[in-house]
Length: 336
Image (tube, rainbow, N blue to C red; front, side):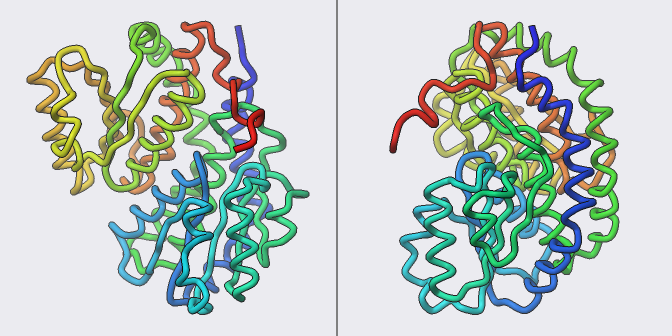
């Protein structure tokens, strides 16, 4: 049986290609603006904030010329520093463009004269209409709650904007690889389905997963736990930076406990490997996604690569438990 999420996963390469073709001039304009400001705010919720985490940590590991802060919608809204922060830019991320938390923060920024940028998939949404610079991801409508094509295009927009404005020594090569990402995604969608279907069947009866990554992979581990496993597969899940393993999870990791690791041979993955080794000694059920097994790209781009096999894993994990990976029980139905 195919669910709607299947079609949306397969549409990811084309959605990314169309977004680059349509929105690149606006993204270039935002990159130019970033070079003139003192601070960059990235704001989102759910899958959208995970893209903010990933690009923030990628920039911090590679560049020195940017001051970036990440907030959820309402945490940003109540930030009292904003009134004195006019020489800044705020980039808002939302699939729907109507996320109440994020929209409230955008309106507050407009009141304070902060330049606002919205990245959303809905061209007629409030966030697109009200931002000073609107960027529309070209995915058409997405219905699966955990976000596939809207995630990949949103992440790509943030990487394109921020790395173009960065002083990263290898940014030209990174941006060239980013431009080739639609082709890479096409190959990964074919190459990684079967092995992750088998893996999902093996783990279908597990009820909780711990998800670890360092650098830009933490943002994806956050998405994996929060919106893919909990919302999509209806499994308990907890995300952590790899370095935080020894400050909590080390006491819960034991024989047969599932722990998902994302590792890219980043310098910070020295700590990831220590956690992997510890879990191996405990005979925990370690699931290791290693960048070298999937693609030869700049390590900072690893979230783009890992998300495809992870989507297949969650898709089939839900399926083997009789769940539609794109459906919801409460989101959108309960006023919160």
